[in-house]
Image 1 (cartoon, one colour):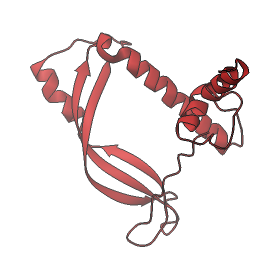
Image 2 (cartoon, helix red, strand yellow):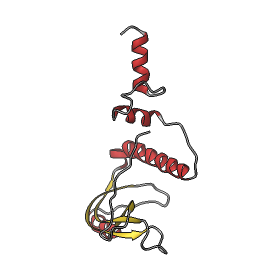
Image 3 (cartoon, one colour):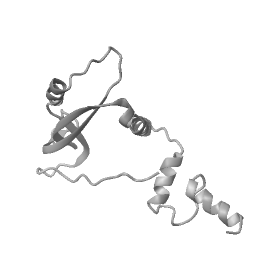
Image 4 (tube, helix red, strand yellow):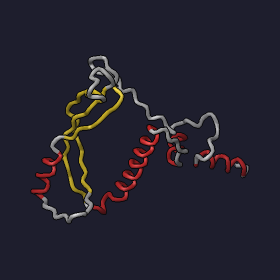
Amino acid sequence: MTDTTVDLGTTADGLPVVATDVELRSVGGGLTKPLRVDPQLFQQGQRVIISYEAVVRSHRFDPIDKDDIDGDQVRVHIAYPEVAIIEPAVGKGQLENKLKKMRESIKRAEEAEQGIQRLPTDDELQSAHDAGEHAGGIVAGCPSCDDEVAKDAAGN
């Protein structure tokens, strides 16, 4: 599995930062003007794709445990989005793929917190391979490593 550890540093008070978050400001307001210009009718239960680009204007540090203000901190990025409603046909495939991967990543992280371990997926193995993490040898199950083994066996 690819190591996604990022050094988040410390706060100005020297406290360890162990997580990040994003706080989106004025999201509803960000939709008001576009819907005034291009009104949309949505049915109850209808799924819509709402996309935004946000500018991070500031950040703050909050304690992870509200009762331990001198403990581990979360860096909260304060962002202001520009919002658009996208026609489903435009980006639905890419969005569904991204959401599926994100849901899986979240599920795996929650399982890891509970001590549940799973074998890495083909995508995770391929990402590790692409990052050069298999330079020390062949990793079984990695699509690229398996291709190398097959080529060697075929005499190529």
